[in-house]
Image (cartoon, rainbow, N blue to C red; front, side):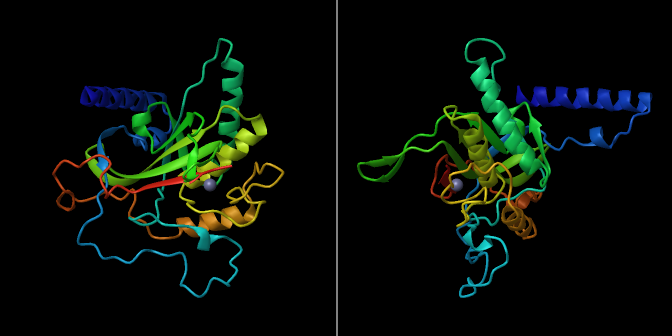
Length: 275
Ligand SMILES: [Zn+2]
């Protein structure tokens, strides 16, 4: 069924492209679908033979160097820095009518404002189909976090990273898959600040800034941060200048052909709480 839908999409795309030729419209926008649907996907398994050293943001002992960012706070995944040259983002649809519509629209506008902040500095696009996305944003209160037995803390946002091998248009790639939960229970500005922070994790900033004025602050300040700071942007620039294997087409012979087990030990999941 998925294959049939995929073919239909291609045909529709071709028809639009032909229409574009006919109308004399520029074609590059239609020439390639940068967010094709996943045909299949499985958790990435860390190769047993790999003894590659864990990537680090900087040599130990040089933490005192001030780069004007917080690169030292970032953690790479087991497969390296989980970044993509182009991100496809799905946001849970909201109702337009009914008693809940007003609140859902407020939530959506806050999330869209936060996305707009990141969009100014990253290549990303919204998609209507979750199968086309690497980042999925849901309107949901994150479950309570257990700190110690008997102790729990509520949070308004959460981002969870899974490393997936995903096939799109017949090509397998290692991809980060990030589920972002943004609570529907906050006021507009707080929702926006939470979304800005959690989306920062989603786009690869897996760590926290020690400064409250940064979007990725470990401890949010009294004033919600609605704009990316110079330090946020410097950290982002540094991160995206690092080599990454994510999003790179993988040769067939490098992939294991056996079925992978869901939730096995090789699956890397990073959970982060937000403000
Ligand atoms: Zn966080």
